[in-house]
Length: 329
Image (cartoon, rainbow, N blue to C red; front, top):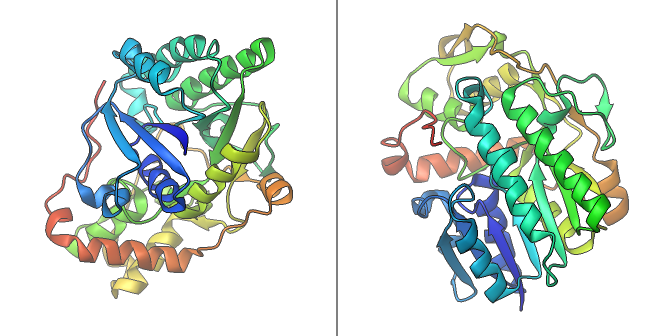
């Protein structure tokens, strides 16, 4: 079996990607995260047989030698890196924490990894936030124009990797996905938060009234695209992963209310626009579709229904979980 190291395995996207990898039966997965494995409700792969899986608690900020001991021993074919400080709004409070993980530790990691002789592909999971506020459908060659400390730190990391590709023929590719959602997502994200707040009778704060538009894409569609890119993309390429459907945040919340039988007006409150909130970044994913024949399979209504079902099925646990982001340096 080919070996895949997944860094950031506790993340929503990382956990679903592992689940999808294991479903294929083609890969041995070596998972890494700075924290211990989360509760099983957030880790879909826990429902599978884990004969081809192992987990290591590794912090990129502190355990680089330990990480490379594992890499040198296992010599993985692929590394897919989901790890980052990734909560946009909180990056204003301690921007140095975001730069520590997303730039300094990443640079140290890539600088050592570039000399490996076993790696077929390094997949860097980054973000459309690097583009800042955009108008119209944007392609992969759009210039970076970040609006927040988080986005600026990701842009800096991306540029460093681009330099390493150019100067060392490092076999890296980039993915930038639209707003992901689905069962297992962090509870402070807009869709999960809207469902939980409505079930609890709490009002959902909508920044700037929730008029910012986004493309929401189901996490399993993103995992399918990520695997295709890992297997087939040429080093140096970047790919957008998105649907063609845009929806304002307030309209997404309205959809949830309709499904739960709750009036929108009774469930929300408008709050001040968050600093650096981009009105829209609309990703053109035609490159991914044209080169590899990928397309999203799960529409928004089906995906919302799945997410509601997950929350309802695990309500005994989820209802007791914290609903706010807890920052770790």
